[in-house]
Image (cartoon, rainbow, N blue to C red; front, side, top):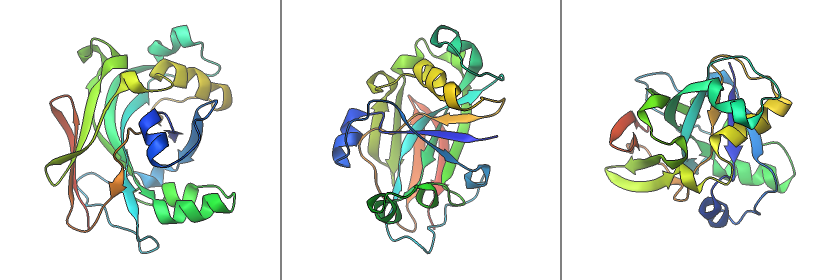
Length: 203
């Protein structure tokens, strides 16, 4: 099982980090050891002083596929979820400045929150899903999949050119604006519309 993550998929988030708008989806991987265990707190790693939350819609792959045509991509998932791509922003900035990969800043233990899953059939349109993140009961990120530069089916088509998708693989589809630092004792709750899909404490 692999975690396939998409960066820079919302225009306002690209602007807030002062990045360039990409011509193609930005793709990186997290190891499965990055998944935060159920009912466990998120521990800020000792190698970072600036870990950011990035809430994202998740898609779970339900069949094996390679070179998937966009018109068939909807057959490769039947569940939608929500999660957090935790990022050690200070470490990421150092690595980017040297032209080095981001994995240490993105793939460390606990850096991937995977919440509950909802059947795709619950949504009238997967390209119009409202989602949000509350930090200490204040909404800090709010997004809608209609604002994605590359929609879910486009991402499946693109990613499957490079990686064979397998049952259980999870695609993190990118984060909207509003990313920010977490500190000890923060409480993070993620919502798709009115459904709370995760709740974690930061230590």
